Length: 273
Image (cartoon, rainbow, N blue to C red; front, side, top):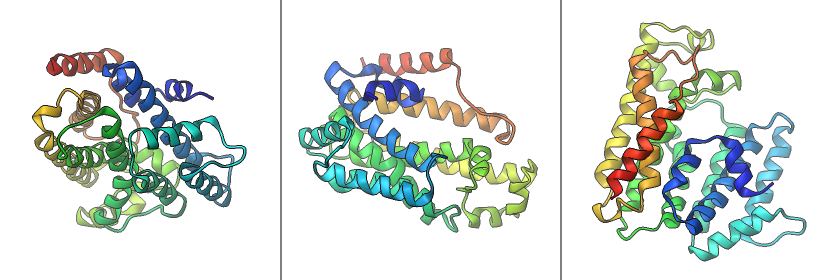
């Protein structure tokens, strides 16, 4: 399957953000996104056991380092990107390491433990993405790191119910204890006052990362970072919707409408000019 088809089928907000890019960078970021999608799908697949998933991810780690017999076209395309943009191989491998965490970890005792996961599956993706987008000020790396944390925390808030069905709890255990909300209540999907206060706490954490990202974005790179700013706008809107609705994540799948997304994309495009 081609990188473009993988991206289209994902129906991701990230794919919408690519609209602002020129043809070459759009093609390149599509290849990178397809790589992220493929390795993420390995971890979530119901067709393989943990050992098989580990083996497939190990194979991808080898393929980003060098050619391997029978490898898919995507592997060659990813290595071409690594060479073209001088992408740090350790950052690319961090993304694989983040996906591997889902094979072995289903609970996080502290936010610091969760932060490592968020860094690997989101901030590392951002750090690679900005190399493809192009930037002039090295502070863009701080922007990518903070925005990645904000986006992933928003994902965690949105997907509490879905993650429970997969046997995973990303909300830190220390945070559940802080608000007197037990794991049994979470498993029973109890939407009570303690749960709302817990989620408000996580949302405030996410908002803080969004604010840090905005403060770190260099003015000279605002135009090249439009794809990332589109993502930021969409996810901030999503977070706000959940807040106003008191986080009914057990019974709803929150998303913005196509019209709302289009409006936010248009707003960011206009800002860039």
